[in-house]
Image 1 (cartoon, helix red, strand yellow):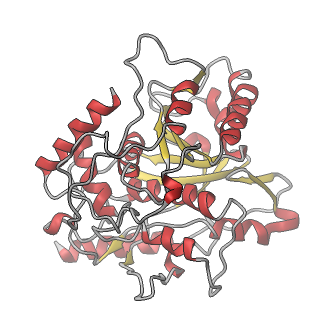
Image 2: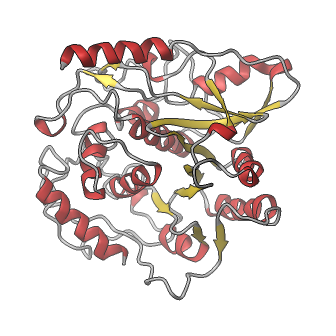
Length: 397
């Protein structure tokens, strides 16, 4: 089995080493809300792309759950794409959208702290271990491929334990974004003693639960908005293409999760009718943090021209991502959606409504279950996982 896996990993690595260069064109390139022109600032475009955190398959990490797989090659690509989208939100949260990464350049502590959230260890809050185990509560066995919506639900639950980044994660239902619910969640005061008890075991240092008053002060909680969509039946419906591309132009854009069946990519922009994406299908060795807390980060940035694919080849199941650090960012996003997407389309990608639909269950902002231990695992068994799942269901009804 090891020999087969090794051959598979090597094949994936070889395939992923082939990356197309950009063509000569006057058309603008859009990357996560920024416009670039190949004829005048190609180097800036490539720097912008290489600054994004790039998460790929890894090998030789500690077995998931103690006895599970020690590599996610072949099954973890959508989880890696979810990590990339979330990491982009955290970069915007702490360093700003215009932050740039340069090889061998010393980076701020916030950058290394963000990167440590995603290392392949059971005590890192957004590690492959935590995501795979939390996915069990979404009906996915460890080692099973995730879809965009499953990854979104997993990130929403894990974010409840992450006090350092203090994100409000909203995953839309039924292709509908409810403004009232988002504002209620982002302005919801922090709660500690009033939340329900939980038997889940949480590692404080892993989940960013150092003392941080910023996460406890009243005010707008930075918003990670994820909109899972189905843009067709077997193929993407061409009527959605212009609106889909428009999302990458918005300054709040975090790109999109999607790809092809059982092949996930992180889409960060477009050129003409081609999508630009970061590909997680390269297997690299596990990297841990140094004693001083820094991370050798060269393998976490794609330093070559990225892949491109025709939009019409996209699987119709996708998830759009947006980040709104302040309330004014969200208000601006709502205005852009009304102007550039909803008013232009006869068949809408999604709906944006002001009030909570009366036929839906009441919206209650989810809260973190009370921590009762500082054990090393967020979830130690499937039984505890389902206990946690039930508690989240109660809180979200």
